[in-house]
Image 1 (cartoon, rainbow, N blue to C red):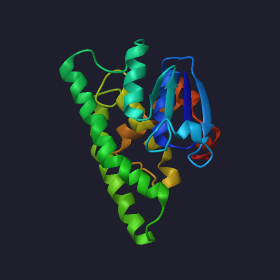
Image 2 (image 1 turned 45 degrees about the vertical axis):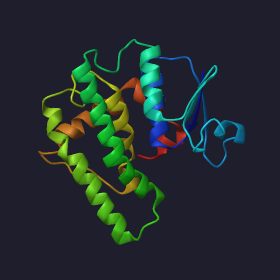
Image 3 (image 1 turned 180 degrees about the horizontal axis):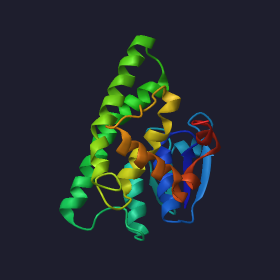
Amino acid sequence: MILYSNNDDHYSHRVRIVLAEKDIACEVRETSNEEAPEEVLALNPYHSLPILADRDLGLYDAGIMLEYLDERFPHPPLLPVYPVSRANSRTLMTRIDKEWCPLVDTLIAGDLSDKELLIVKEELLNEISTVAPTFKEFDFFMSEDFSLIDCYLAPILWRLPSLGINLPLNRHLKPLLDYQTKIFARPSFQDSLSLIERDLRD
């Protein structure tokens, strides 16, 4: 099994967290969309990373990769067993993909004016702030157990300072800040970081 991973991409980072959390034997080849060999990018019709190659199987959607790894290596499980809970988890992951990730990607691209980027930063901060109260009730994102949803959220939180967003220390955000500290200290999260990603919060 080989993961062709973009070394500073939050989608690739999700997959690396799952690999580390489950201690899966997988060769991680760090590269970038610009430097990846053409034969690798050819595995993905969209010519982008990450790409997971497992024998004759080639996966190029990070969400599908996460569920494939969770099903193929079921311990520890990172999705709930029961259909309703599993559907709720998928709904939350879809929300992050459709509502938060476009904002993150826009900030990383940096193609807008300063005024437009400021609006995007405020929108992302507002989106993240709305989930802060849930961490009063749960140890992890809407769950008592670490799950795939945390693998979606953690790479975004890690990148916030590099995007010019600093979460203010106040009573409303404190549960989220406590969650963030706990997630970042998790061995699987630390093991998942590329050298470039480690520098994002220095």
